[in-house]
Length: 423
Figure (cartoon, rainbow, N blue to C red):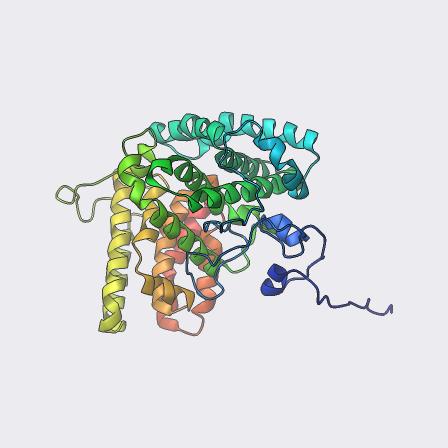
């Protein structure tokens, strides 16, 4: 029998690989893992940025290299290279020395791919992002037009198109995933640079990139090898933290946004007046299971019997948020937008997110019920797929040995499995 090949442990790998405890190939200017996920590599002789601490606090090590760093750049962090906030036509020439270092293809091939991606976005991708025509107009017309003025927004558009191409053509993932990472990296750099000087008067490019980057973040499982999340619950918490951080950044501009052609993004779900909304409308013609209300009654009773009074308020509020989401699904029928489920993430109290991060059983059970809403989206929106089953499996594993919680998990697990089976 041949002897096992010896393996020399690397002690000079990049900081990201050391933190994530994966083998670093030490390639320069960026190792394989950093280049794959579009993040600055400590091995680079000219790092893209000196990252400040993220303004989104999701735990001591909750931030993952799988997601873009959207915190504002520090002064001088781009080494006098402007990666996206200049409309100057000479922009591409000024940046060639830097972008070539992380470009996945030679310049002439990259240009051809970018033309292909823009065509694909305008003719296919944009139409898949929403159902409502007013929202589709934003993605097909308003956002690309904004990209003509602000290159970092255009990078976001091209990144989303590349992710979509990789999803549609798995055999060509090695072409399109590096393109998605490349454009997402450059777009995120420009976004952070713009945030450094963010004012209400220049909200539009920040808002434009933020909307498209949310879609890109949702495609995380589809961009992973075998579409497998490394740590599903943790990845979901990271996603929630970034969504909430973006909301906080853009909140001062909401009054202006609703007066522009981007207003449908804010009003992207069916709105209900509290005095007109039925507390438990029928879900027979919606994307949610008809027995959802009964499941919520059982969950509320379980919470009230088992959660200490000091913590119950925030869990009650979170469950009420799920019920509000269900009413939005009921109003939308079979045409619910992503916002009908996504808004629940914004309503969660920080203590519930902390309980999720520490795998507290009641928080996990609450998330499991929310995944029923998420699974309903997976039928219509490709970029939301592969989340619900993986997070549910992680929840079940963390509840092993707790029979009362496993019993309560039966309904959401069964409904998620049934829904995804028809996707």
